Length: 545
Image (cartoon, one colour):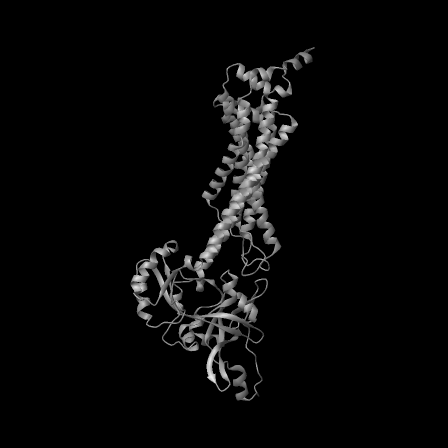
């Protein structure tokens, strides 16, 4: 009897306060969050202890560890959002009438079909907004990486002739440009297209004659050198007697190749023969890219011959002009076109080789703010005061490329926004079914004094809550994913991609734009169902009750 009385005193399970029913779920989520945080901390320590891979080195273990750290970090954020969600709904319930009823509708135990559709609505908006945010960040990262590489390997402003022919009297012009406020550096260069040949292969290249001291103020050639030294270009005689411990190349996995000891000969070898075999003639230095070095199969201190089709006139016609060089360094710019095409040598050697003594092909200029290079161009024109020269900034030179990237990013944003629009259709279906299921409740609310505007706001807020949950989960998850990729990095296979890691641009404005777009689409999708609910008459809702 006492047991029956006790059971009568206890409310049914469905009527118990929701906070009591959700307590086991919250406890479970807290335990999961604690375990994920511990695993994430351990992976962070492991990632920091990983050796720094050099050059084209890449291995699966490194990628798996970094990817695991990123995924665990994203999981921590998702679980924390799930823990925070009930408290956010509690805050909505203590506000005005419309938000109270809307939050209770979202948390209520609806029919199974409505529950599935609500979950699908949230998941659809979350996945779409996450995909849009991630794609915009990756495309922004590629755009910024490309822009950084272009500015690192090219001048901000280029002064040359319209016909592309060399011009003289450049020393004073260079000094006047360097004296301009806002100019970081200016360097004269000589350019020409020739063929490069080695003992095993040949390739077409663009030769650039430079002054090592001045070119370092304009482009990042010195920073991009991974094997050899820029000093070897000025002092090529050192290349003939490199120490055995000098690194002259890198293997497929990034392993270093050393110079090694010189070839030894017996003591009884004739001195003249010994001199021919061991004594290497001095050659001018040449800096070439990683891909060109692979094509020619050369290393530092190896010889490379440059062959120009515009040579001297001989008895058999025009004879190609040939000159032998010695590889002084190998650079890696991150752009295949540069690494496979560009070579650098001393400016006086290039002038002699192309027979343009006292002339240059262009003046390359670097300014303190690359974004304002177009504003510096008129000042350069005034400083030079020469009508035979033209001035172009980096945007004008690469206009087609950056215009295509901008258009592609905008088109991607629009296309993926349509995916959010499709996901919002589930919100429309959910609210329409909710209006059908809650017709009696809507009629009762109107009968006790709820206005049409209150019912309209209630269902709009309910749809905004569903869309807001999906938007927050999607955007925050994407933010965590992109931040993890930016922090830990994800190296890519160099045999497939010509970048060492996936470029990511974490911009708060991009994520805010995606969140605003997704929330606006979800809010617009609530208008018709909310209007239908507000037009329901109490007599229609209670007619069959």
